[in-house]
Image 1 (cartoon, rainbow, N blue to C red):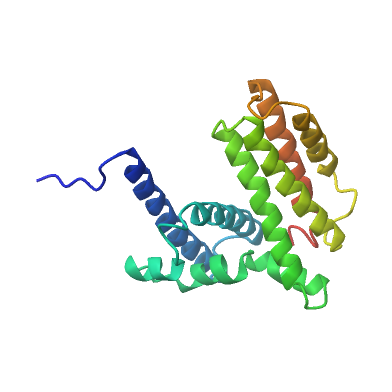
Image 2 (tube, rainbow, N blue to C red; image 1 turned 180 degrees about the horizontal axis):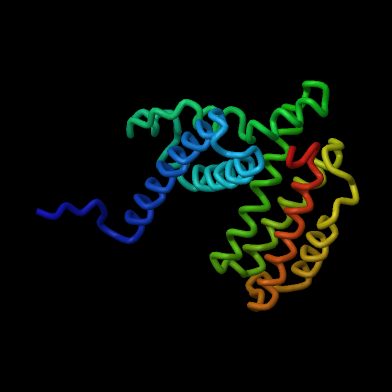
Length: 214
């Protein structure tokens, strides 16, 4: 007898999101163990960890009403992933980046690490949204505004240069969107260009972090 897990499209999407959350936690645990065992390089670890952290933050925020406690979620679905939960819920940045920021600030890198993690999340959320064809002005503008504000915090903290390559591009796009109507949509060409500019800005941001790639 076939058992249906959902009754409508909304329920199906919720179960798909729960499955994604489960997969992200499991993948993070495997990545943490691989890094500790020196199976993966520091640069590859950092790149993948940043992606998982951003995906986790975006997904957990959208599931807040269904999953108010990630710890309880892990317990319910028997997820024995202590390293992942520490990385996702406590640290919020890759171990490599956490150590570099702490060293560059004389051991007080907690605030800088959180600011960098927030910035990375905004970058990846904005780029993923464009890939999902969320191109209306009232969808794109808030994402870029959050990113710009986060970049300003990181620059003010001295983690990256004030004149960081890419910051100006983000501001230019915000100004351009401000002249459009809320319901207006970016053309395919504009969407591709914005994604390219965001990706270039993200790469410049990562390269500007203390001892990037060390």
